[in-house]
Image (cartoon, rainbow, N blue to C red):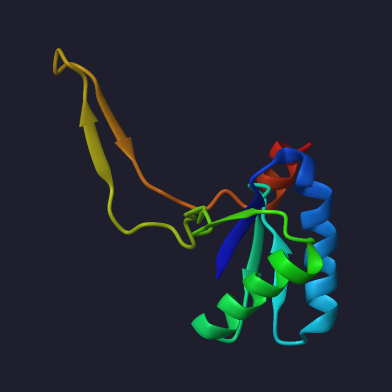
Length: 115
């Protein structure tokens, strides 16, 4: 997988159109747009990706230059079940104690945040 972007911002429409044409011409290539806005190309191997990138730049974009990067990976963590361990935190003056346990919030809470 590689992320591609146009070196010149004016070539962005060429890039998008070139990616569409590449996707139609090669059934093994998978093109996606990530949440970060990156255009990611996935192929059947390193050599296949090199050929796809060459075709994209020379054939489908009319020679416009592209930048090739590793895609940004967004990490997400979640709690699947209630923890079996209770944790303790003390205040600086050691007079206050806070006990805590991790547990999932549920689907209703996630939907309420999205609204």
